[in-house]
Length: 258
Image 1 (spheres, one colour):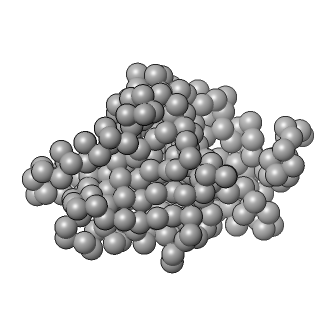
Image 2 (tube, one colour):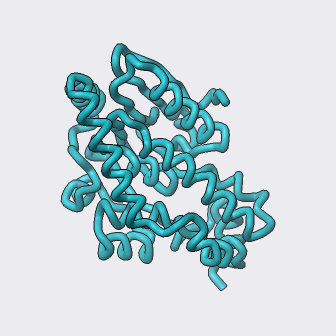
């Protein structure tokens, strides 16, 4: 499904996805998520494409899911369905047999953070910020798959810190934690990302495919089956806190937790 807020291009051996909704810090609509999956399918189908870059315009990577779309959530099952849908998008990125690079300039928050974590590399500007601030904004929670992905990258202690406090980490802390692969001045970010992509495009596809496939098998071996945390998702998305969080976010005020 095409989206006017997401561009898909092929530059030689490199596919490029660009989030282009800068007025909303590239907050992701359903159409943008669908278009991202379509771009991943196109990247895998195009034999010439050896690397995929995901980037955002306007000084932001992606500020998560567009919260206005949560207005229609009237039952806890809507939250479970949303997390399943988001899991499918993130899993599609992670299952690509080619290297993936998240070019992170500015915030990668919520769903944007999940997308960046699913990529093989996170090449960042010094303005990059990562986190999932739902404990202080919306009152919902991550899926177990996305929580496990965060634990795999940064460990349980920092995951607890970020999820319980709702704070964001800057580029320096992200690099120390292993979340940011490399950090550059903003003016150099695009060129450095393209440089890494060009280098990766020269590496043996057989090695890359086998390594990524084995890492997926290791991941799947450690993860519980889908639905293992549905009771917790229902509790969050069916709560008064979630309804207040959405209303407060859309009204531009701080939530008043009961």
